[in-house]
Image 1 (cartoon, rainbow, N blue to C red):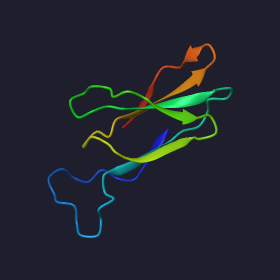
Image 2: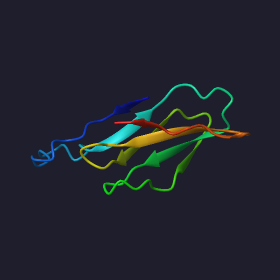
Image 3: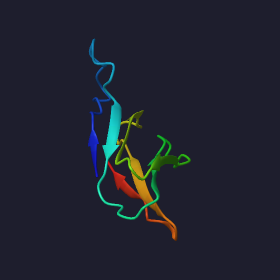
Length: 90
């Protein structure tokens, strides 16, 4: 898994023309045989928000505004027998 985009420094204002700073896209590989994926965002208070369902044909999701500075985004593959563990990328 990896993230595209960047999390700006918390101590500096977003420069003019860079309004997309802080918007991230998560990309992943694998999940052969999965019926879909669940994307999880961890709020700034540490709570995991309800998952976003993504079709099996997609291996990317975003852009989303992630909590700064961590940008915790997780992905789990969904199979007929259940879901995999959540893999977190920071």
